[in-house]
Amino acid sequence: MALILNIETSTEVCSVSLAENGALVHKKESAEGMNHSRLLTVFIDALFAETKISLKKLDAVAVSKGPGSYTGLRIGVSVAKGLCYALGIPLISVNSLESLGIYAALNFTQFSEVKPENEPLFCPMIDARRMEVYTALYNTKGEEIKPISAEVITEGFLQPELEKHPVLFFGNGAAKCKNVLTHPNAIFAGPETTSAVFMQPLSEEKFQLQQFEDVAYFEPFYLKNFVATIPKNKVF
Image (cartoon, rainbow, N blue to C red):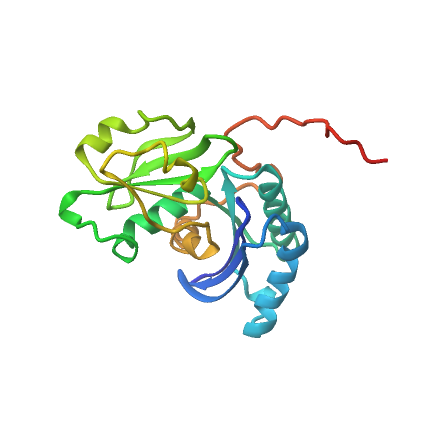
């Protein structure tokens, strides 16, 4: 029995959900853009106000650890840590691609007419600018068969897999790849955005296994090194 607050801020979507034993109690989310610093704490307040559940009843906070937006990840992790410190509860981290990929793999009949006997594969893509994406590959059981990586998408991407299986591409980095991945087995179908709801089974499982993070030292999984740039148009 666990009541867990899930926080997903790895992309342009700001999403929070409250789950009890892995099942959705309530959610708040917006895909209007990178407004996490403005929306996140407001959504959390509204979540508990609307459910009339006290924050003190939380058993843990789960946060998307990345990969994804550097700024979004830092905001989500900072808020999650603050709540864990204040409430004295454990911190759980969930990989952004894993929650997206496993959700699609276990629910793919909602998105596509591909038959299970065709052994489809599932390729979540989180936009990493230009033609680069953060990605991985999962089978119908939600098992990872290609590890998480940053990839520049070319025509030959996943060519061996596409020769043998239909591959579903989805996530906010998938649309820009349609003109490049033209193999007949390349299917663009699945959730277009991340969501805290997708985190719920994974955060519940980690809670039961007591797979918690060190609140003091936990850092987001950026995958690529953060490089600060100087704005071209300086504002005084």
